[in-house]
Amino acid sequence: MDCSKIKVNMGSMKAVIYDKKTNPKLTLRDVEKPTPNDDQVLVKIHASSINALDYRSMKMGSIPKRKIFGGDISGVVEAVGRSISQFKIGDQIMGDLSDSGLGGFAEYVLVPENKLVLKPENVSFQTAAAFPVASTTALNALRNKGDIQKNQNVLIVGSAGGVGTFAVQLAKNFGAHITAVCSTENMEQSLKLGANKCIDYTKEDIFTTTERYDLILAVNGNYSLLSYKRILNKKGIYVMVGGSMKQILKSILFSRFLSIGAKKMRFLSMKANQEDLQFIRDFIAQDKIKATIEKEYPLCQVSEAMEHASKGHSKGKIVINVIE
Image 1 (cartoon, one colour):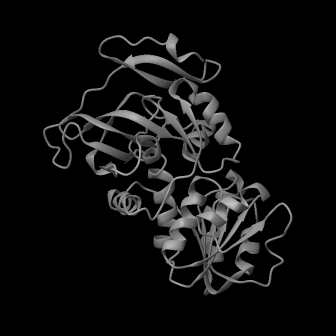
Image 2 (cartoon, rainbow, N blue to C red):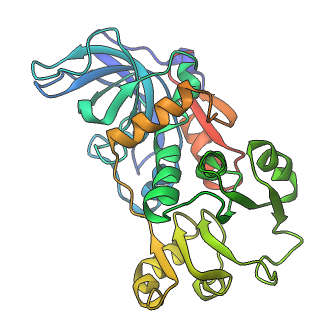
């Protein structure tokens, strides 16, 4: 699509709208620019990024109320409601819209202030937009669900994508010994991010190893829950954050039953949390964690970007440039 052909009228904005009647279903249109209520922040979006929640929600028919996907944003505060105390006009922010209606694939969005933090000065808007959903998912999986401890033996299955690349770095910061599972072409990347060892799943069966793990983080891979349980240490914890829909449903249904005993099988159901996002923001500012960006697309090519991301082979994050 030629972005230059989209013209926006006064009081309107560009947004990528879902319409099941069109082909592609995601098209760039001219829609009404929102106005904040007393408890809302209006953000002029500079960049967004794609997460599994976007393309999986679209596939399942779970469409946002305003029909605009996009859970990650970075940008500048354009206006604030009367009750807003944390931010002012002109602040550069990053935010997680994953449980507040989405809306990141547009020029403007209304956001509750507790879904935002100030953008670190040491990164661009594009880089900042890569963090919110994927990095806080990795943080919650490792720290909250996985109870990660220093010197633990941690297996990260699916270390090359958005959540996986952040999980490797966070686990390294927590002092763990990391084994990353990925394809041949992504092994070097995982090692550079902090993995101590890589297993190429295209050449090696990870379940034939004699190695046992204190924590297993499953981001990708359609493996059986019983196979994961067998390679856990006696009091090990397995945390599922992604994979095929079939695998996710199995984890939700059977994890409690399989957690009878010392080994625990858990599934992460994420909710956006400002405290977690601030934790990540501080790590970014201290150069403790970096975003791996595979490719950037303009706003008018969100449909192509979603198609690319949905194939599940991205090396890190795919960023959408709203302002180029």
